[in-house]
Image (cartoon, rainbow, N blue to C red; front, side, top):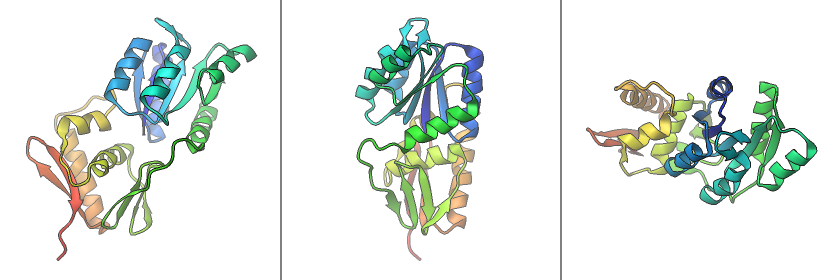
Length: 226
């Protein structure tokens, strides 16, 4: 799942981004409201972590836009503003949770998990292709009804392909979906990732193939029956 992290303290942003990455998330770190608004135009996020004291205003001003532009997004406000009235303002502005700084990283991850478990928009049914099933709501993957655990980038790649099953997904779009803003991406990184995912699905007998359209992108489709 892709996460928008709106935090202007570089050290804090790096630490949070690293912790999110270890937990399987792809984190896009921005340091201002305008940068966050630009990111919302480019990517789909399942979760936003928003600081309040930003260089160009209060992070709470971003919450209505988050809800409007990306319905179903979960929002957790992280801030040094910790009075009861501050927390009430944050929750009334649309936050799903509010965690004052300083906080324990393990508590943050527990609150993120709780936010993502809460009911929201009506869940969409899993995308099923041959023996492969991808639940877009829970990010759970299975092959022949057996759970499949994937690396976070493999998961992001498979999600982008399964959302467009039977259609070519452009390379640039896949790179945007798989890699965060701060990732150092080598020229052949996407090719290697696709090859690794292709082999895993083949070895598990998922009954799908990932086709390459040279210089254009990739497509996932049902494998021909033999």
